Length: 217
Image (tube, rainbow, N blue to C red):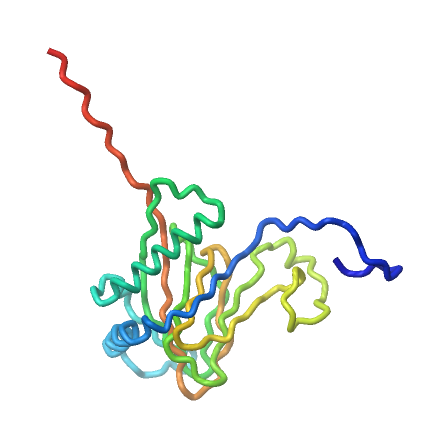
Protein backbone atom coordinates (compact mmCIF):
# COMPACT_ATOMS: atom_id res chain seq x y z
CA UNK A 1 0.00 0.00 0.00
CA UNK A 2 1.00 3.69 -0.25
CA UNK A 3 2.32 6.00 2.44
CA UNK A 4 0.14 7.49 5.13
CA UNK A 5 -0.18 11.20 5.90
CA UNK A 6 2.73 10.81 8.33
CA UNK A 7 4.92 9.26 5.62
CA UNK A 8 4.86 5.87 7.31
CA UNK A 9 4.46 2.75 5.15
CA UNK A 10 1.03 1.23 5.77
CA UNK A 11 1.06 -2.35 7.00
CA UNK A 12 -2.57 -3.29 6.36
CA UNK A 13 -3.09 -6.54 4.47
CA UNK A 14 -5.08 -5.99 1.25
CA UNK A 15 -7.57 -8.48 -0.18
CA UNK A 16 -8.60 -8.08 -3.81
CA UNK A 17 -11.98 -9.51 -4.77
CA UNK A 18 -14.45 -9.27 -7.67
CA UNK A 19 -11.79 -8.89 -10.39
CA UNK A 20 -12.42 -8.00 -14.03
CA UNK A 21 -10.09 -9.98 -16.28
CA UNK A 22 -8.95 -9.41 -19.86
CA UNK A 23 -6.95 -12.18 -21.51
CA UNK A 24 -4.39 -11.46 -24.26
CA UNK A 25 -2.61 -13.93 -26.53
CA UNK A 26 -0.72 -13.64 -29.81
CA UNK A 27 -2.05 -16.11 -32.43
CA UNK A 28 -0.53 -15.11 -35.79
CA UNK A 29 -0.94 -18.67 -37.10
CA UNK A 30 -4.65 -18.00 -37.72
CA UNK A 31 -4.15 -14.77 -39.68
CA UNK A 32 -4.04 -16.21 -43.19
CA UNK A 33 -7.15 -18.35 -43.02
CA UNK A 34 -9.22 -15.89 -40.96
CA UNK A 35 -8.24 -13.02 -43.24
CA UNK A 36 -9.38 -15.01 -46.27
CA UNK A 37 -12.80 -15.79 -44.80
CA UNK A 38 -13.13 -12.23 -43.53
CA UNK A 39 -12.41 -10.67 -46.91
CA UNK A 40 -14.97 -12.91 -48.60
CA UNK A 41 -17.57 -11.83 -46.06
CA UNK A 42 -16.72 -8.15 -46.55
CA UNK A 43 -17.00 -8.50 -50.35
CA UNK A 44 -20.67 -9.50 -49.96
CA UNK A 45 -21.71 -6.17 -48.45
CA UNK A 46 -21.71 -2.66 -49.85
CA UNK A 47 -18.46 -0.76 -49.52
CA UNK A 48 -19.95 2.71 -49.50
CA UNK A 49 -18.70 4.32 -46.30
CA UNK A 50 -21.53 5.89 -44.30
CA UNK A 51 -20.86 9.50 -43.32
CA UNK A 52 -22.13 9.14 -39.74
CA UNK A 53 -21.26 5.48 -39.11
CA UNK A 54 -18.15 4.80 -41.24
CA UNK A 55 -17.91 1.07 -40.60
CA UNK A 56 -18.90 -2.28 -42.09
CA UNK A 57 -20.34 -5.20 -40.15
CA UNK A 58 -20.46 -8.61 -41.87
CA UNK A 59 -22.88 -11.45 -41.27
CA UNK A 60 -22.00 -14.25 -38.87
CA UNK A 61 -19.72 -16.80 -40.59
CA UNK A 62 -19.11 -19.16 -37.67
CA UNK A 63 -20.14 -22.18 -39.76
CA UNK A 64 -17.39 -21.78 -42.37
CA UNK A 65 -15.46 -25.10 -42.35
CA UNK A 66 -12.18 -23.27 -42.97
CA UNK A 67 -12.46 -21.82 -39.45
CA UNK A 68 -12.61 -25.21 -37.70
CA UNK A 69 -9.16 -24.83 -36.14
CA UNK A 70 -9.78 -21.21 -35.16
CA UNK A 71 -13.14 -21.96 -33.56
CA UNK A 72 -11.77 -25.02 -31.78
CA UNK A 73 -9.13 -22.80 -30.21
CA UNK A 74 -11.82 -20.30 -29.18
CA UNK A 75 -14.08 -22.78 -27.37
CA UNK A 76 -11.16 -24.58 -25.74
CA UNK A 77 -9.74 -21.27 -24.49
CA UNK A 78 -13.18 -20.20 -23.31
CA UNK A 79 -13.63 -23.40 -21.30
CA UNK A 80 -10.19 -22.99 -19.69
CA UNK A 81 -10.89 -19.33 -18.84
CA UNK A 82 -14.21 -20.07 -17.14
CA UNK A 83 -12.74 -22.98 -15.21
CA UNK A 84 -9.77 -20.86 -14.07
CA UNK A 85 -12.22 -18.23 -12.82
CA UNK A 86 -13.74 -20.76 -10.44
CA UNK A 87 -16.82 -21.86 -12.35
CA UNK A 88 -17.90 -25.50 -12.17
CA UNK A 89 -17.43 -26.64 -15.75
CA UNK A 90 -18.40 -30.27 -15.07
CA UNK A 91 -20.68 -31.39 -17.91
CA UNK A 92 -20.52 -27.92 -19.45
CA UNK A 93 -19.54 -27.24 -23.07
CA UNK A 94 -18.50 -23.91 -24.52
CA UNK A 95 -19.97 -22.98 -27.89
CA UNK A 96 -18.85 -20.42 -30.47
CA UNK A 97 -22.10 -18.63 -31.29
CA UNK A 98 -20.93 -15.86 -33.59
CA UNK A 99 -17.84 -14.83 -35.54
CA UNK A 100 -18.02 -11.73 -37.71
CA UNK A 101 -15.81 -8.98 -39.11
CA UNK A 102 -15.92 -5.29 -38.30
CA UNK A 103 -14.13 -2.83 -40.57
CA UNK A 104 -13.89 0.67 -39.08
CA UNK A 105 -12.91 3.62 -41.28
CA UNK A 106 -11.58 7.04 -40.26
CA UNK A 107 -13.48 8.66 -37.36
CA UNK A 108 -15.44 5.48 -36.63
CA UNK A 109 -15.73 4.12 -33.11
CA UNK A 110 -17.51 1.42 -31.12
CA UNK A 111 -19.64 2.71 -28.28
CA UNK A 112 -19.39 1.16 -24.82
CA UNK A 113 -21.62 -1.90 -24.40
CA UNK A 114 -21.91 -5.42 -23.00
CA UNK A 115 -23.24 -8.64 -24.56
CA UNK A 116 -26.35 -10.37 -23.24
CA UNK A 117 -28.67 -13.12 -24.48
CA UNK A 118 -26.65 -15.92 -22.86
CA UNK A 119 -23.20 -14.85 -24.06
CA UNK A 120 -20.54 -15.67 -21.45
CA UNK A 121 -17.33 -14.48 -23.12
CA UNK A 122 -16.56 -12.04 -25.91
CA UNK A 123 -13.38 -11.38 -27.83
CA UNK A 124 -11.52 -9.76 -30.66
CA UNK A 125 -9.00 -11.12 -33.15
CA UNK A 126 -7.16 -8.33 -34.97
CA UNK A 127 -6.44 -8.61 -38.70
CA UNK A 128 -5.29 -5.16 -39.87
CA UNK A 129 -4.20 -2.40 -37.48
CA UNK A 130 -2.77 0.67 -39.25
CA UNK A 131 -0.91 3.42 -37.43
CA UNK A 132 -3.19 5.69 -35.35
CA UNK A 133 -5.91 3.04 -35.30
CA UNK A 134 -8.54 2.59 -32.62
CA UNK A 135 -7.63 1.12 -29.26
CA UNK A 136 -9.64 -1.62 -27.59
CA UNK A 137 -11.03 -0.28 -24.32
CA UNK A 138 -12.47 -2.08 -21.29
CA UNK A 139 -14.41 -0.16 -18.65
CA UNK A 140 -15.02 -0.57 -14.93
CA UNK A 141 -18.33 -2.47 -14.62
CA UNK A 142 -18.99 -1.32 -11.02
CA UNK A 143 -21.55 1.44 -11.24
CA UNK A 144 -21.14 2.37 -7.58
CA UNK A 145 -17.40 3.04 -7.95
CA UNK A 146 -17.83 5.00 -11.16
CA UNK A 147 -20.45 7.20 -9.50
CA UNK A 148 -18.20 8.35 -6.64
CA UNK A 149 -14.77 8.00 -8.30
CA UNK A 150 -11.97 10.43 -7.42
CA UNK A 151 -9.49 11.87 -9.96
CA UNK A 152 -6.66 9.48 -10.83
CA UNK A 153 -3.13 10.45 -9.83
CA UNK A 154 -1.72 9.18 -13.15
CA UNK A 155 -4.11 8.01 -15.88
CA UNK A 156 -1.22 6.40 -17.79
CA UNK A 157 -0.80 3.79 -15.04
CA UNK A 158 -3.31 1.00 -14.44
CA UNK A 159 -4.34 1.07 -10.77
CA UNK A 160 -7.44 0.17 -8.70
CA UNK A 161 -8.52 3.78 -9.34
CA UNK A 162 -8.63 3.29 -13.13
CA UNK A 163 -11.95 3.68 -14.91
CA UNK A 164 -10.76 2.40 -18.29
CA UNK A 165 -7.98 0.14 -19.55
CA UNK A 166 -6.95 0.23 -23.21
CA UNK A 167 -4.93 -2.04 -25.49
CA UNK A 168 -3.05 -1.08 -28.65
CA UNK A 169 -4.06 -3.79 -31.18
CA UNK A 170 -1.73 -5.50 -33.63
CA UNK A 171 -2.31 -8.21 -36.23
CA UNK A 172 -2.62 -11.65 -34.68
CA UNK A 173 -3.50 -10.34 -31.22
CA UNK A 174 -6.53 -11.89 -29.50
CA UNK A 175 -8.38 -10.38 -26.53
CA UNK A 176 -11.05 -12.22 -24.52
CA UNK A 177 -13.13 -10.99 -21.58
CA UNK A 178 -16.32 -11.83 -19.73
CA UNK A 179 -19.38 -10.64 -21.63
CA UNK A 180 -20.51 -8.48 -18.69
CA UNK A 181 -17.34 -6.36 -18.87
CA UNK A 182 -18.17 -3.17 -20.84
CA UNK A 183 -15.97 -2.66 -23.88
CA UNK A 184 -15.60 -0.13 -26.67
CA UNK A 185 -13.17 1.16 -29.31
CA UNK A 186 -11.78 4.68 -29.43
CA UNK A 187 -12.21 6.84 -32.49
CA UNK A 188 -10.23 5.57 -35.49
CA UNK A 189 -7.62 8.08 -36.67
CA UNK A 190 -6.09 6.39 -39.71
CA UNK A 191 -6.97 6.80 -43.38
CA UNK A 192 -6.75 2.99 -43.65
CA UNK A 193 -9.43 0.90 -41.89
CA UNK A 194 -8.88 -1.26 -38.87
CA UNK A 195 -10.23 -4.79 -39.35
CA UNK A 196 -10.92 -7.32 -36.63
CA UNK A 197 -13.01 -10.37 -35.91
CA UNK A 198 -15.50 -10.08 -33.06
CA UNK A 199 -16.75 -13.32 -31.48
CA UNK A 200 -19.24 -14.52 -28.84
CA UNK A 201 -18.96 -17.64 -26.71
CA UNK A 202 -21.81 -19.21 -24.74
CA UNK A 203 -22.21 -22.39 -22.68
CA UNK A 204 -24.60 -25.31 -22.55
CA UNK A 205 -25.03 -28.16 -20.10
CA UNK A 206 -24.37 -31.63 -21.48
CA UNK A 207 -27.48 -33.77 -21.17
CA UNK A 208 -27.15 -37.21 -19.64
CA UNK A 209 -29.81 -39.87 -20.13
CA UNK A 210 -30.48 -42.49 -17.49
CA UNK A 211 -30.49 -46.11 -18.60
CA UNK A 212 -34.00 -47.57 -18.86
CA UNK A 213 -35.10 -49.68 -15.91
CA UNK A 214 -34.91 -53.43 -16.40
CA UNK A 215 -38.20 -55.00 -17.34
CA UNK A 216 -39.69 -57.13 -14.59
CA UNK A 217 -41.24 -60.34 -15.85
